[in-house]
Image (cartoon, rainbow, N blue to C red; front, side, top):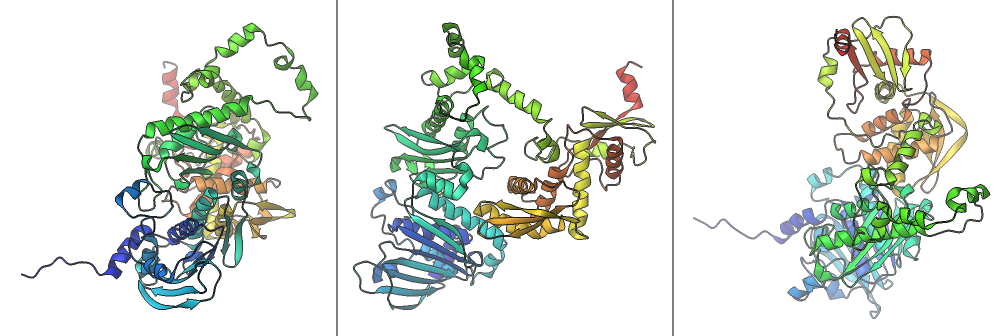
Length: 623
């Protein structure tokens, strides 16, 4: 019998490795940008065509490579950073395994130009399917330019698995931001299809954060700076008011390498406990510096998941540092020349801080949380904390604000209510499509009470309106578009580059739903019109909230992009709890609800109404 085990050919082995390293264009962006950083570049340009499927090019002014190194760089496991096994435990560079260029060359057409400062001419290499097609001298400036064309041209099945251009572009922008954020002393630029999306000048870390995340963070960042013999932490956290419903603006770096760590995310979130809503996520850009021997960065092909030697120490240190920064932010006095003179007359300011008051303050759990030794990692449960009263104060009054009535849903993120017994509602044997002619009663400005032949029904006005709008928008997507009311003074909306990519993707769907939005230059859009039945004046806020809600849905793969838009706008435009309705409005709401295909639940599974039969009412009174 002949032997049946044999070695894979190199070009097949390279394609298999490419499946681990180069999953999409963004994977190549990460590897090529990190190589440019390791080369000591002061300026790095990223050029994209067709979301990286047609062209992905990185140009840097780093130290370049010799002719021999340029050829060797495309061999598997060829690296300049490891000589012996101990080097694996002292890694301080971004790349080190020598797989990236070999993997890229296996699934794309690659052109490399590189030159060292001491060389008179550079080297040009053209590689296709791991085979060198051309090599010749070239005149160029010091540095390296590597272009990756026609990704997965020789693996059509892999190419078919790529997402839409907008989706792939979002991933590219994410990887670009993660590298650019870690190196504010390097100039970065990103151009896509001939249009520049990012132009990040050299500067401080705070300047880079504001450049990337937006000017709204300029006055809302708190410095985090702690040093110990074991590890250091530096960076910025957003003030509590910057917390969002999504994790978008959260960046952790260990030894300048971006990582994903739910464990450390929890450490930061726990430090914000009681300062932000439980369903919100704080913004932060934090850098942890510690001995490379205490970290294993080689546990995942993308190197975004790492292993700490002692996770508990790192967790406690991060939590303590963030709490300390928040404490300093809270107690440091600021000089405000525009302070209302009336504030000076308040008891808290005008009355002396007596010994009795001092003792009362120092005995509080909040004070002890920040002052007791070794207690920086401890936060009392919410039912014991004084901050709970502040939360209750705001949540109680926020239901009555005009802003809530018009636009905002303060109930928190949209979560599917899996506990609803939909079957019981829909098969109760009673379908109130025709209610007796009557006057409706509104209870607590939230519920509509109606009498039926068999008892009473209680309708939640917001849930009911959500179901009505959801089905109305579904029909608009497949039929006649919602009527648009043109704005006399169009609103201008400026968003982050990541959100600009997302907004461009959903503009056709927004047109069907009555929003007339047009691009207007770099990351700027003009809202020319809004749905005819929506009050004008808050259209910019409506689009911003829509983008935030779509990002909240991003982890739910069962929803298409169009479905996310419909669900978000249905929730956003629904009449909110706390708003008083006239008899005509209540009747219209009830009639529209029971003309829906599925009137008993919202699109998220929450009940729109519940029924109390006459027998159940009699049991309540012992009859």
